Image (tube, rainbow, N blue to C red; front, side):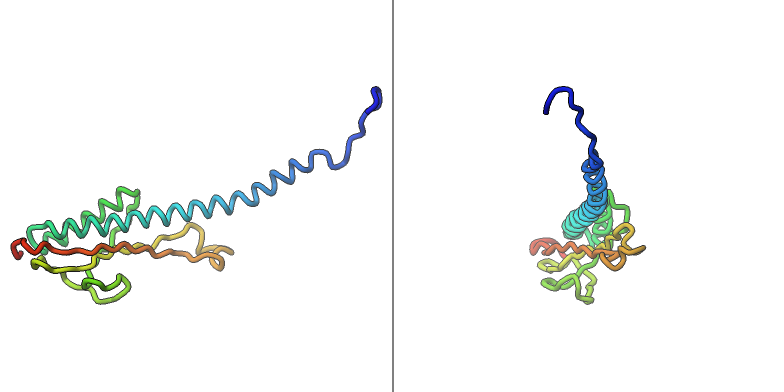
Length: 159
């Protein structure tokens, strides 16, 4: 460039910055929403896993079956609270080896050597997924399940 000659202003000068900011905002908002959804589902996954484990342990160490059920529900609620979830924990006991999807719930007893599967289920509501255009793209709720294989000690007194 020769001295004394002014450079002419281009009509496109500065438009790359505007396009970059516009594209960033358009891409950043859905990415941020996706991350928030994933974090919420992961938090719920941690909560139901911990709740099932703690409910099983609380039941197995209780002095009676009725007290064990009460302890199990309370332990699951505490586990949910640890993850910042205020929903009521749904705790159920299934026959040993059965999945949490089966409808065959049992009334657990502290019989020595008894085995059960402890299930805790939570439906995670996804924000704004049931409104607008998002209800076609993403489900409104995600189901997370926590399981724990419970074995009552063989050497404990029958309660």
